[in-house]
Length: 370
Image (cartoon, rainbow, N blue to C red; front, side, top):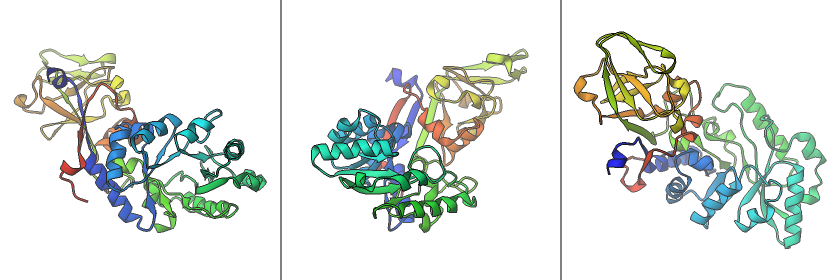
């Protein structure tokens, strides 16, 4: 369609995503590997992502919010769905009606959920989050030691979990400190399956795997082992058409702030993607795109709807209005853009905008290998 041809195209390779899940499952053999699909599947579409993971054998999922869990429940009625943000006031009945499992983060949530269980006359499944060093969510040692254990009686404790702060730094001693704290804190609770490892935590080795691993960003192709070769298959490609090519005849500058000087003979290509689409403004003058397999640097600042590339070093016949430019692509595409923007791959993915035409490559036709 003509309207589609004029837009940037975000391609999501669901086969690569499923392969990444299987890779992580092999690496964490003996543990259940679940799918973290919060924030709309890290910006890629929670429902198609969850479908692909389900087909690959994933049966448990984590979301952040009640509404995310409701949407996923409607799609996967048999899945186990955990809600990381716990039990905000007033959500108890809605969460139970959707068959979701809250990750309870403090005593007040536990009190309300236990009261719901008693009121309904049934044992309700729950997970408990222990704070071992993140200081965001979870029971700390003092709170856990004060806890009235009778609050747990009407609940089915299906998981005890914590979260690693520096798992992407394998030599950081905080990893072992958190693991030891986790062992100490969960010993204060009734026996239950345990979970500590996120994406990078899986690569810290079997002592971090426990009963369940919770990969998120690694599923989507972001490197969970910074500084080493990316062990994950690329999932995301972002391409956009050239709108215009400027043949520079007199010295000048490009874009807002006049930060990129031009000289006669240069060529500047304009692309219809900007920070309104989630392409980070901080990537201006730092990131690179690919045109026909060759790199072209961003020229000037990123604006709301447009970016500009210096294509002076590329053959003129390869960069014309309608030519496609790759803004994210290849094994480290997300990480490379994140580095250029001085951020992380998580932010790049979750900010991907709604104006892109989205194309999903089904798992069975992706051609990737497990």
